[in-house]
Amino acid sequence: MSASPATKVIRETNFAGIAPIARGKVRDIYDLGDRLLIVATDRLSAFDVVMPTPIPDKGRVLTQISLFWFNLLKDVIPNHVISSTEFPPPFDQYKDELSGRSMVVKKTQPLPIECVARGYISGSGWKEYKATGKICGIPLPPGLRESDKLPEVLFTPATKAATGHDENIPFERAAERIGAGLAHMVRATTLEIYRRAAAYAEPRGILLADTKFEFGLLNGELIWIDEALTPDSSRFWPAAQYHPGGPQPSFDKQFVRDYLERIHWPKTPPGPDLPPDVVAATRAKYREAYRILVGRDLDS
Image (cartoon, rainbow, N blue to C red; front, side, top):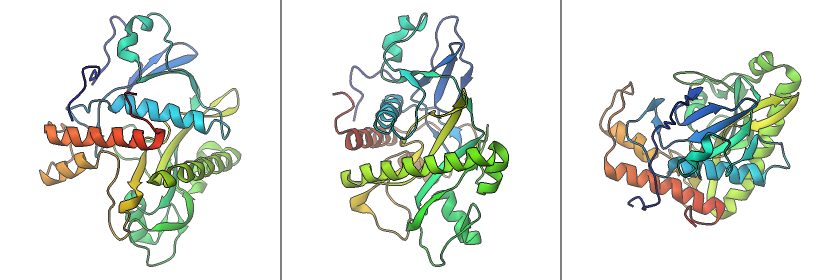
């Protein structure tokens, strides 16, 4: 799939005389005082390394899917979105570059934990279960297979690593970090968002295997921040192809991971250039996830 003429690939934002306060693996963040401008670029990270090759449309997909979920589930918890179409000076002169991939959001005090919900056993949860029979200290029945549906949805918090991997931690350690009352609140909120999103996605053909959320505090109120149920923060599996007992096909960067494993890249910087077929397949999967969940094509 080739990029359409309207597709502008942005690996990194560069606005004259304006420096971002942070460049994450995917997002560039600008400080607007009591607000932030978050720009989802087309960067892609795999095995915690940012690849040199961007994926066209990726930033637009991440932003538009997040906006969709933030709006759909706004009755569960307030979110940080102020606008995705109006940008204050001097950013208004870059509207063409920002359009579709950017959000002006409320500035909150982010909680120092990742809030992960797991409905199926996969990824780091599967590795932990094989080693200990538990995930984040939660005992699980013996004999589970990789990708099995869990007996109940689990809240498995994790630390936030500035570099490298996040670390799964027991609920008690999360409570020590943010306070018991707040920990119980984010657990209940995480599980409710997951259940609502999974119930929406499954009849449309996508299983929500797991996902991670971030929350912040604003004037004492809990706010849903960052991104919402995207292919970067979630495992979306095609329901029609679901066969537990091993890894599942997914609507994300699995093509990139598979390619990197095939070439025996050592998973240390720098990342290798990605071939056009891997880029095209990855772009198609991101766009397909958007189409299925939102119900229309990204460019419609």
